[in-house]
Length: 473
Ligand code: ADP
Image (cartoon, rainbow, N blue to C red; front, side, top):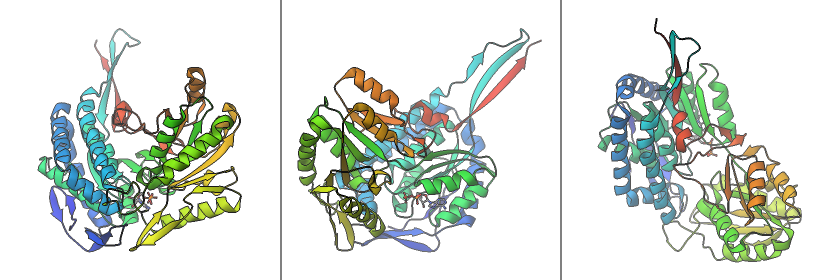
């Protein structure tokens, strides 16, 4: 596949770079290696398209999004295969991602019609106070490789629904999924300039998005380090910014948990995408009475999972994105072992046909001094630590600079409400390891980010508040 840039409704070529399959190093295709010049063109196109797009009714914009949703579902298998080839996740998971991605288009197609303002009782008889909600302007969206389709729609759908126009820069590992999305935008008949795609040099494109005064909002999902850089860069023109950054999700399993449920949901959270999501379970705290039983059941579950090429449907885990990712996982596991962690299953990886794979790994006897209890591992490793009380579990869970997702398992309502209220995380799964949904606000506290995506809040992130005071005498 030859990916091109999509600017002002036209496809544009240029120098290219190779996109490779992390399972075997084979070439998936090429994408254009663009930089600041093309980004400036894309911003100009988005800026010119803004007036007419923002003046359409929300219902009109919603119709385009619904068309896009239908097209995405129609191409589910093809898009799923491309995701697996670009970033490795198992095909079933990839097709599931396409459905998840499409759900944002559907949700925001409707939610755009509910960008309600306010009428406020004024402080004088001669005045009327009104609040309008209006699109913020041109949006620069930067997305990561771990959800090549869903992270695109989670940003682009609410932006377009709100009446904004967009310049998207996808991750360099997965630009072709974004190119396919641009093709669907073209097929859906989106007016020229409303959605623009620029692939290539991350820093060149990113800095240009920051430099351009016309870009009024930057929305980013990725590492905390790059997020901080963008936040600083946004200061120059005081751009609005939404950030979905790293996470270090704790799982708490209490004595009165439904253990089978806790095992199944923790495994689903931990091993999805081979542990490469920002909401993947990163550390597991199990209360003493059920510690041994949980370790035993969880180990069995992990050991039953196969790792290999995601195109082979007998595999539940694909490769890691690259060798650096593998090295990080390996470093974390070695550090834990040196400090006394017990390898219950896994504990090693392998390289095959140029791909880097890590076995689903369960470590017990883990303590908070180990690197993986502080740093995001981004791999299929579940470290389990024994805790005595609910308070200890909550305290350890909160002892992180991150605050994205947390999970806990208890059948007791009172304990559950207490834990839910005291976890310093933006997303809490209570007896649920998979809380993400288009209808709900996704995002983190502390260094995990700013703002929310999805839900009502996801639209709000692309709206300005305008207060109008009308004199009536
Ligand atoms: P990760 O690769 O760990 O998910 P990154 O933050 O490196 O996290 O990547 C997320 C997105 O940010 C990608 O699209 C990447 O190309 C982009 N990116 C990386 N560096 C910069 C930068 N300096 N400015 C803007 N975007 C960047």
